[in-house]
Image 1 (cartoon, rainbow, N blue to C red):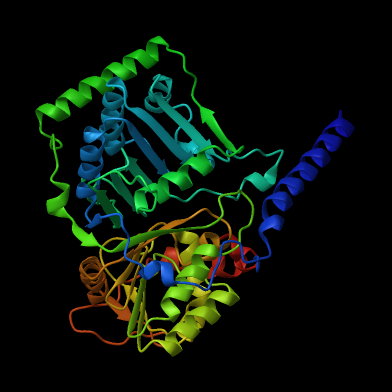
Image 2 (image 1 turned 30 degrees about the vertical axis):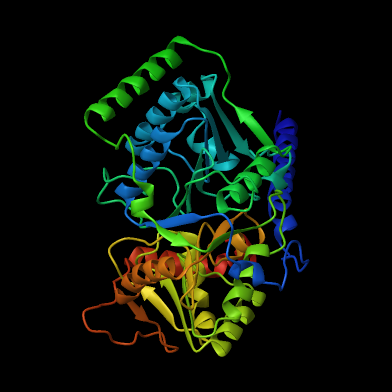
Length: 469
């Protein structure tokens, strides 16, 4: 018996080593291949034949209501792609509206990252019931398989909603109560999205909505994209669908969302919008998004302002940020302070590497507000704006799929800059000695001692694996 247990223990240990090495080694060396990268940025400054208009979505409640309004308007198709969906009040609202749309014949496609879908969706009645609807399909991107451990790390980080080739909502929000609605006021994360509206159908396929749809179609049909939840009804599923339909009717009675929305009135005209993405396969990637954004920022004439929740730079990223700081007169990097940030691993890395970032000579503004800022945005001069899913970290650069629309238009740039200025006004500049430059009305937020100890220890432990952060 002892020999059997010993042999079993050895087998388990070998399997564990296999899983760990198989998960981390394939992603250990950042790629230098070009992929879809190009030095030609002229396309971002072209005036499109497709007339599109855009708006910013800043508040969590507005983000929920905008989704509901979009879904309510749908006549033919709804595409919803996100990194993470979890059970909650906002999810019940959205899935009630999606079931109502599916009931009236709208084709609904929901695409979720496989790891987070496996953790937060499998075994939950609301998702199983929705997936059983004949007009609603849910697929997971690259659901992990321990027998193929290289499937663990390549994640889909995209977040967007498309309705009828007319409306696009894209940004950094995941789909649960922390980011949507106002039911958890003490537990929220700030985020940002861009809403793009197109009054007429884009028959030539050049507008932002057509670009995102083309990207979605390609990734949706990849071999690692798998349908989940059976198209078979059970008594529990029927009860859940009934609950969702009743919830939808209650929302209608309470005027939870408008029957119609004046999209023209709430948007401003833009000249062009170009989608920038990473490769959509599941292995380590060429840094297409980073390189494109670097090229755009480095050619700025006057100013660049970056907002990112986390800053975890590779050698190439340090060099790129330093070059931008040297070439552009006015540059700023806005990032969460460690006391505010909600990503423990990224904050631990920042604990050790903040000085390297400061030494790029790009002023680092650390946000000291009440809640973590999850928005990922850039303003370049007075005419280019970028809002999407890409964090300025190594995971977003070399591992995950990412989507970042680059928007050409002065009115929209002015709107975005005003919102980012609000973040800056609640931030302090980190000095090379570790202290902050004083600012009237803003105090450095105290970090919890236990959290600080964790960051100090984890910052060293994580260094060999920081390419996964």
